[in-house]
Image (cartoon, rainbow, N blue to C red; front, side, top):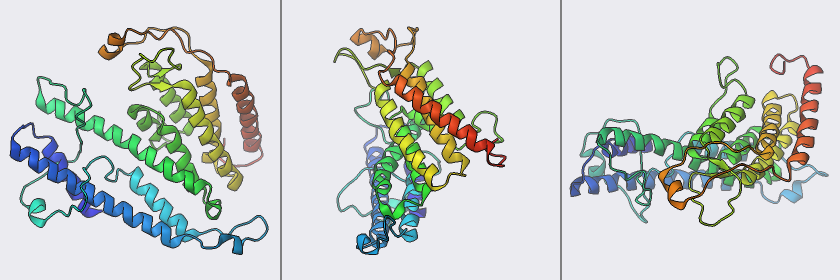
Length: 343
């Protein structure tokens, strides 16, 4: 991990240099490959740890409907989630089979920075020409950080689905809570994924609870026009857009995960908060939105489409019923437990 951190710092420094010189591009490629190699090595180690700690012949140890809970496997899974959630190296480097960075490639040059970006040649925004190269580099690095959060969410959600069906991990609610949050973030734009992934603090002014996280996320995607109804034509430019019914489906899946967390640890206010907040977020999304003036990008203008309104989804009434029951249960449970966090 220390080597990966140092390699990412070297990569960030090179990415801030605005130069088309061959040597710079060559050094940049080597730096990306170094990060990619270290990232792949760490992921391989984490996968090995999970493989070695898995319970064998679980059915043999089954007692009725109960399976043995595997604490070593849970620690391995949480270590993997922590690696991806804290940045890791996904998307920062470049994969090259059999690549092993030499000591000369790592030590020859002086680096000092704290950010990273892997410029995508197919991304018009990342290749845009602006008058201030330094500002452009910093802007691209910021966008890459946001994309990294979204990539991490997708990785955690994908791996978490396997953990969710693992009978030996049912008691480890923190694993599933992280997975549920990642399921939501994976279906959002990078900015919205960062918003819903922020740690919440009861003493903070804005992001005090999961209810704030969901509310702020929905406010963001409504105001920037990224949340839309399913397109009526294939000519729509959908990059950076979120289809409302797909988001509702993702949030429904996450809500089921949060509900299982409640069943395992009903006195944890975070589990209840994420469950109810997600259902209420689904309700707001499924309700639709009236016509509004939404700023369009140049690409939106090129395809000549306009978003008139977001139609109410067919599942709205079903979600309203489920959310109503969940909110009532939450309030009743809060009243029956003398816990300051619930109040």
